[in-house]
Image (cartoon, helix red, strand yellow):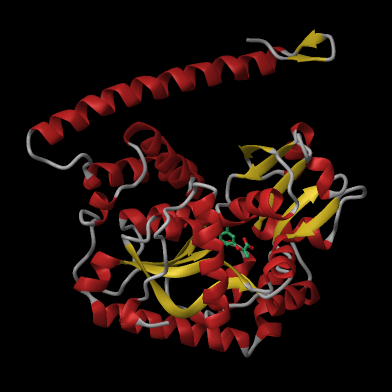
Length: 368
Ligand SMILES: C=C(O[C@@H]1C=C(C(=O)O)C=C[C@H]1O)C(=O)O
């Protein structure tokens, strides 16, 4: 189908539409074939999926497209065989020895921990890529979006004392609109595809606090494109921070951490650190050691925020002062108030149908 801009059809756009049509048809075909293979595997007494094979697929996409390839392959697999199910955790491929593989987010929100980790090798990626890597066993201990944790709570354990959140403004989980929130009623909000928690928080806040009914669409996290088709947009990470520190004229920036605290009086936790239950059961001492390394790294980073900020400023996106302010705003703690925030959010999330009623945090070591 051709797309019209003004009165004339753009040939390049119509080629893109053709390609999307073909990609969608290919995905349908892939899903049909995959369903047949899954049926055969189950009929022969096997499990529905083959983790080694899926890892091969992840690697292939990753070698083509980097961390976006990991996200893409996890989405392709999700379309073809359903969500990552409990059965796969038991089949994640895990080395029995050697150091556990640590993950962090590529965003500045992990800057403090990354700086503290210094030479400890880590994998970095977007929250979506890290969630996929943790669930399929490509990393062992990594931060994960709170919503992804809650969706997979029966496969994961959270690490005590470490999170990514805020007790008030967060600066990097934002809803951008042209007018007041009430004006969104009956309109459309684009949700950046890198986000799970902020996206769900925005939908909860708009429905339950602002009382507006809105249509949602997941879009690539590029603000200008998102707002071309929608009245509001949710962004996270460095892109959100940049659009907050240097706002576009005419746009209103609603800080989701601040809205949540105004509404509930509680801090918001956007991500926690987690380990697969299977890894925790098989290598408890190694997980304990990795946990200690992470807590120490976070502490060392927090005690040297100006240096952390300088190291991050080298990428040229933000100044050292901006980063010092941002890193000081983030809350990496996971105490009683943060847990109360998580539980309150989990209840609201369940009401909106995105996480199970019984989803809760279970901690490695059995405490908070
Ligand atoms: C504070 C942040 O929290 C994050 C928000 C996430 C989400 O919305 O799913 C996931 C991980 C964190 O990166 C941020 O993105 O800056």
